[in-house]
Length: 261
Image (cartoon, rainbow, N blue to C red; front, top):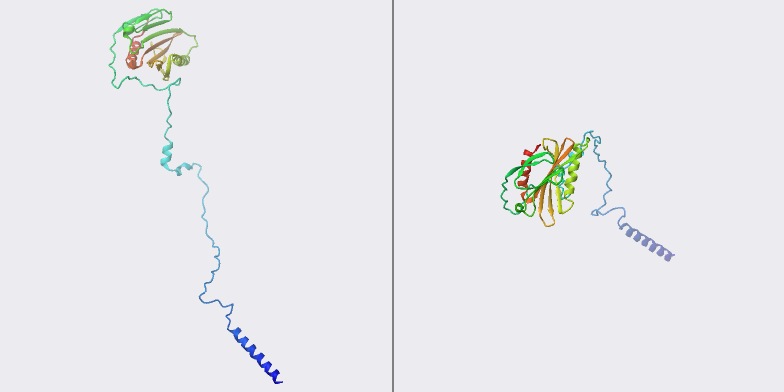
């Protein structure tokens, strides 16, 4: 009996001790004071969206928002290369052989009468005359007067036309002649656009050209065509390039003095 009482006493004592130890364990529901805690997730906030007026006036120019400097740059015209050829191009008035200009030529003029084509005019004295063709009158520079290995030639030609022949026809014929003159004997050939000018008081057109021959000789010239009554009169003067200004003065003198017989 006493042993049973002792055993019960021991069991009760052990249960009390176990209960005491359990009360000393920290509670899992109590967080330590200094322990960092996670903040709750951020809740989305409402941000006001700006409102835009998407309607534009009918005359609105979008380029007005661009850089003004860039717009000005776009207004600059493109530069185009110019090449010699059949297309009309500007031609310098004088071909200079050296930095030092040559002395201007002094001419003595004399009257020429071309009975076969019905005109008279004044030109450089002493030139050789060729009247071998019924429709042409040609003056050629004598050999002793030739400069730069190219003889000056001044020619007139009269060509009959039909009643429907117009100034537009004449202009087209002049362009063709300027092109054909450079078809042979030249390594370079360039022409100007044709310009309107009278000859013998009649409407017409003229054009200039520049060519370089195979030996390097530079040639310049002018062709002037005018529409007369039922015919076309053509004046052609060709000369060494470095004396172009001098012989264009001769052309002016011829034009100022030409008359119908």
